[in-house]
Image 1: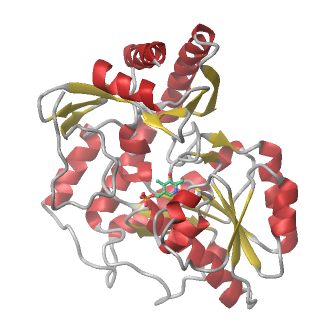
Image 2: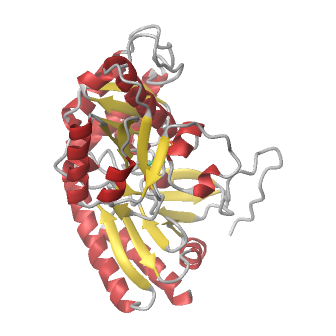
Length: 394
Ligand SMILES: *Cc1c(COP(=O)(O)O)cnc(C)c1O
């Protein structure tokens, strides 16, 4: 194992594993000592096509020799192409591009407030969010986040957010006031423990929004771009949100975020109301286009479904093998959680250190699996065997 110490001039804001990764290819990554790992996290739901995916890499190489940056004072042709693809895949109409998930959610929040205030002409600003949610690390998005540890030490926080229990319709009804402008949620809470929303509840939220004139905002930063088995998680709920945010899987690892909305809502962002220097630059949007093209050409959603059923089968066996340690297996597509009755850290660390398999956690008791969409059956066996040994040691 490599012995990595934190560089003394780097801020110490991450509790990092003691490894230094220097290379990736497909589902494999290598550390600075040459040790190989199986990445069963996709760099936290980002490298869905594997590391350095050849078709995206080729397009990025071409773009690197052509134009990197030009600002949003001009038209960037790739933005129109990517927006058209996202519109076709989502049924929404217009996109705004930025650089990260938190920035996409900031855009989503600003869009909802501006729509309420300038298009609808109301004074509404309040957004209902949910316990255990995760929406980002900027001041507004950490305020929207339903986890106290993310807010600790950052007061005063912006106003206009109320947080209620997830999958609880009465709590949402009770939270609606004459200031409410939107409801914002993840359909599978990723960081918060891999909790899927109930279908009837989500449909009821849509109806509540329609009744009260609220926007339904879905944070698809982790669930979107095929991760849950459909292009977007909302497509499994038979509802249409007014706007969504995207990021993680959209650029195969090249930083890019997006807000995609109905035309009516998107119109709240008139010229001069919102913007970014880097957002949607030619490199990022090229990565986005190549990622979506590759996924379509390779029928990636079918692969996600196949990999999902193979993993679920193996995880159910694991549950039978360790009935006292494995409580339940849940999630959608390739955003899966294994809830344990014991802390998950031991098994996750054992898998990485002893078996070279990188797994994630989602809260103290949940092992989170986010394999790529090109994961093989042999790699599934390898990962589940590593987790199994880790559980045996726990
Ligand atoms: C990762 C994530 C974010 C934040 O994205 P960043 O790119 O880290 O800012 C927001 N919402 C959800 C659901 C996420 O999974």
